[in-house]
Amino acid sequence: MKNNVIIIKDLCKTFRNTTVIHDINISFEKGKIHGIVGRNGSGKTVLFKCICGFVPMTSGSIQVKEKLVGKDIDIPKDMGIIIESPGFLPNYSGFNNLKFLAKLQNKISKKEIRETMLFVGLDPDEKKHVEKYSMGMRQRLGLAQAIMEDPDILILDEPMNGLDNQGVLEMRKCLLQLRNQGKTILLASHSTEDINALCDTVCKIEDEILIKIRGFEDVPFH
Amino acid sequence: MTNQFRKWVRSPRIWMVFLLFCAFISNCFTGSIRIFCEQYGVRSSIWLLPLALTMNNRRLWVMLLPILLFCDAPFLDEQQPFQIIRTGRTRWAIGQIMYILTASAIFFIVCFFISVVLVIPHWEFSFEWGKVINTLTQSYVAEGVGMDAIPIEVINNYTPIVATLLCGGATWIASSFIGLLMFLCNLWIRREAGILFASFFVGFAHFIEGMGISYSAWYSIRYISPISWMDLSKIGKASVSSPSWSYVFAVGIVLLIILSIGILLSVKHKSIEVIKTI
Image (cartoon, rainbow over all chains, first blue to last red; front, top):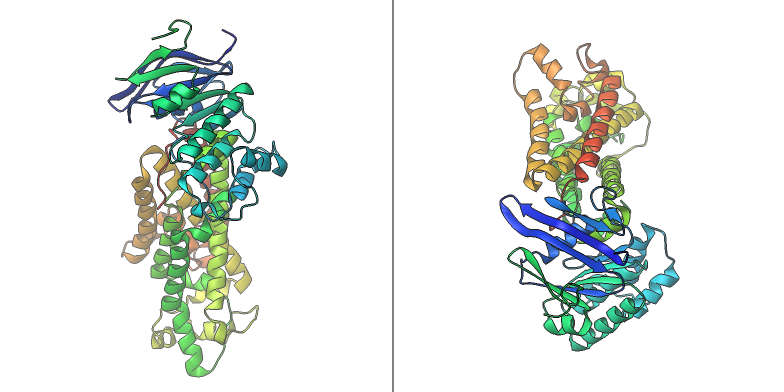
């Protein structure tokens, strides 16, 4: 299907003798929020890292925007990520951290960085160093770095970690706005509430296998 | 690359490297020179570092510092995934290689300035080796202040500026070699492996100078020990059997290129796993 931005076929990942994910076949449609649930260590992060090109696959293929990861491209272009806990330079402000990252691609100006920070609820003029940020502020900054260059695909691994109730609601609002702008979002979360409130499709990784729960053409409701 | 330097201010490891170098050079070399200057009321020139690095024990300790500096290679802290997603693996790895090469140059420059600062109360600026250094080439004088004699070959064969430049170049090669070797080993095996291999090369250079092995073997082994190339008294004009400076720089740069290519090829196939910094 043309609308599928990520197509995963027969994906297996084995670390030494331990199979983490096995025979995963799934496609993620453009402009939707796709939720992935599963216990700790079930393989969600590994799946995300395979999609980002950070972890080589044992077998199978991943196609991102019609390019094969690991063959046509090392790392997919136009992708924003939060994987594991977001790391920043502790002795610089949030704005400076984003500025340093933005310089790597030179696609956006300071104006866009400021707008992105305001969008996620951070003050770009805040001089406070990131080391003094709360966990919630770091998560917001993590989201800001993921979206600031306006990528089409967002891979977000537990983006609500450390957020208070208000923060969760604001983050949800941000994600829904991003979806409405046409972004494709892959979201891993422990929270059923977040998944139910946000996701158009939901799948679960259990015993190395990916199970489609709802929202897919072949599994409309489960 | 620049982001790696931004981490220096808050890195206890970097401060440790800086303080250890000050302590080593002050205790093991400039301290003795200061004592000599105080005793005789004379002033020393500032060109001490190339001479300090001719001494086997001092070189061993100084070369352990690049191991400490680069033991984290490939520097995959929590910020790196954000960079890799923007740059791709190859450009990111080139950045890390450039960081090692630049940090190695900075390492020598900082070491040089520390060695100058530590003799400040008794220094004189001159483009000559100066009376103090010339006098300390006499072993009985050097022993009097508790140090090894300064090798006369260095004083005879090189001007201070040439000696500093050659020593700087050789130290840059040795330090970059240590950094890139650790990067490659850490990519292929695990972080401890890089430290082990790098320590082997530093220990090997110490071993071949310190152990009584035959004269010819001694000179030929030095050809394959990049850390030994920092010793101006054994390289170049010191002896016909010594590696020449053109050998040192040509082979050294080829070695760095081979290691860099190895890193660029390896980084394409390895997992990007965040590792907590030391």
